[in-house]
Length: 329
Image (cartoon, rainbow, N blue to C red; front, side):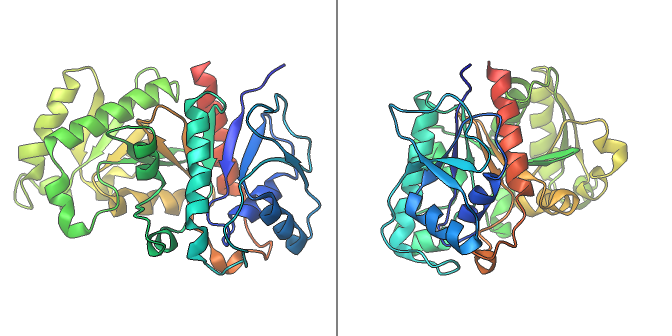
């Protein structure tokens, strides 16, 4: 029986991504999982961690159709530019990191992979190498020629999508336009339905201002932009409630009756989600023509090579990618 294949990118080679991949290999996965990285890097890290992982070489034209056995990991070898010391960033390997993402993304586009799961990258060292890079989300949007994508983080019992992502706070209000809000909401609704199998998604929408503007006394964005946009979206059959004050929206009274929350900006919604599920949460890029999930944490350079890492977030990212792929069958 053939299984759908998935790509796994370990991200920053000096971080904990390689460790997570090796620890993950202790147990068999339900589908073939292809780590796209340097085989030498994984071999060296396995030695440092005292792990006996069998690294099985694979490549285009010779993809496996069955999962690797426990204690083994499929690897599509992608050579490093420079040796790696755990915990020590080296901008010489920035292009290597992006090559692994490109291989995974293009493999999803051409049907080699049913989805891709990403471990954390280090944005700073990539930019220091002279390559403009703002994150996985934006990189994959460009790679797949997608004009609008949506960042959503999820953990058990809570999904939070964002209207704006990595913007300075002083720029957020200007970025909340009716056009952007409508585009993001349509993508969120469509992917909850088509990729998560929710027949009629119920979405709670945060206001931008404290108390959702308090009838215009604390800002007029709710009255002039958000509420009219939500009314137009409701006329299309999208089930929306809001705008609601963010300080009371994240309570059982509301959350038990919704499938996702739409927050206006990064630090409005994500602190709540990470408090609820850090270490067991994931990042999903909505709006792409491919499936992409990711861990909810950073590179943790100080833990690389120590073995003191938790694979919980990566497990959740894998399981979610598998589930999303099943809805596409």
